[in-house]
Length: 419
Image (tube, rainbow, N blue to C red; front, side, top):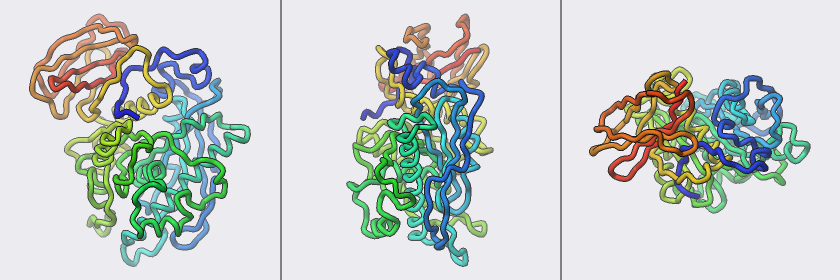
């Protein structure tokens, strides 16, 4: 795998590929469906909770209505809540949004900490619950493959099952995607894994079906140790506040709030460290850093950075998945893209957009605007500034690609939509 993000749309596919998965340059990255069908409360497993109770595990499935494509990528979403609270209904909007782009979107249950709160759960308790959640997610992946092998009622391409989540849900997705038998897992954690049915878990018995995940979307999550990552692991796209006070951006302690105080619980390694390790290994990856923010998941669900960042987060997340399914347009070079560098707003726009650079560099900037056939429409130079204005001029309505070339050789690509 190559540590590259591609920012031109995949337009030139053979007819057989388009017929199979619908890659047409819009599907899987634009909202093209309005009617969404659902299959709610589909059971995929059952297991014992931390407190010893039996919990049945369900998933809600969202998919485009009247879709002509017979093999569609699926993405499994896991909710957040510090492994203490939350439910799959929190993800209804995100699943609907995913399905509108042509994905089969799945919101899953996973077991939460249901032990006593007479004292705070310790690190072993949270490791146990997180490993239970990993097994539950793997059971949900196996269920999708089992259904696909038995009539495929949701028209899923099992080569492209993605996993994603928010906060604790992202930790769950990271573990399900990255933890395997080749990892140097410490003995005390391995004991917890074995006590929960091994790496596959024991939330269902359909082990003849694979729990492999093709790529992970990590919204403010972490991995227990990035030393567990290796070159055979899946691509990963991360978003994180750089001062996150719940799940650390780099290495540190995940915490929970208790009595108005933040209490450190367990050591983890966040999105910055994950991205650094992915780069070292050559894994395809991306990272959006929300700068100067001490909030947790500030870019979603009413957070303070939603107006500035939410569109960019979703656009780039689904572009990442789109490129995993559809690849890169023929004849367009691979581009190394530091996603943290800037954003375009408003987008879409009528007459002008602005490119905001988070940490603008020294030296002159070269900007170019391209159409979707890769033709250069405009080129100009700018003096570095926090915000650069790009005028529409006489361009027709449509989607374009803005390229910023830095003197140090780095490139930044952003899509621009003029209405």
